[in-house]
Image 1: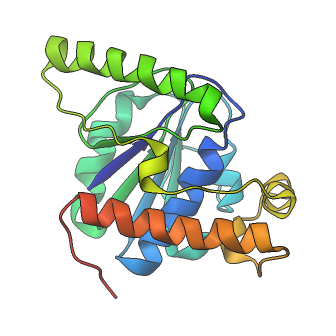
Image 2 (image 1 turned 90 degrees about the vertical axis):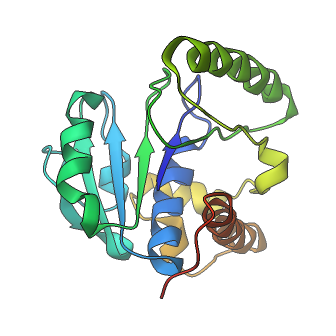
Image 3 (image 1 turned 60 degrees about the vertical axis):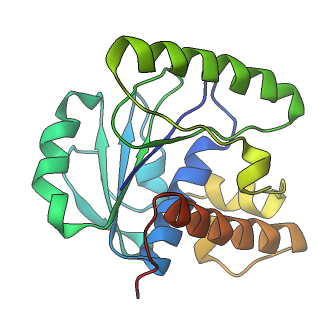
Length: 194
């Protein structure tokens, strides 16, 4: 199963969601690979690994790797294929379609217009490139509250789902990520692992 996390702009919590989802999938379903694609390595730092293009053991029993672009992604996926149950790909603010589900974090309802534009772009890509994406709006999947404790953990390069919740909002975030992982597994038609 491949889950691609993307948004059209930075600062939306995309990397926080992607790293947290990778950890939650690893804990609830099985070994997970987090792939960060883009010009600035942040997610791999949160997971405690080097940004050197090599797969490393990261925090939360997640394998993690940083790639400057996605040209090496097919070879990477072929290499680790049977060693992982899930792959979470964290893309920069430009669409990079591929096989797998597309998760678009939406910060607020004003950002929902971005999601509608994304649906239009995906529909064009589906037609032009033969991809089949199913988009589910953020409200249908899970609502993650804003939390200063989560923001602080990320600023210190610590996965917020691996630290004891410091506030009710932080606890709601952690529970929301667990529900998101369960929903992703359900949407993929898979069964929970260990």
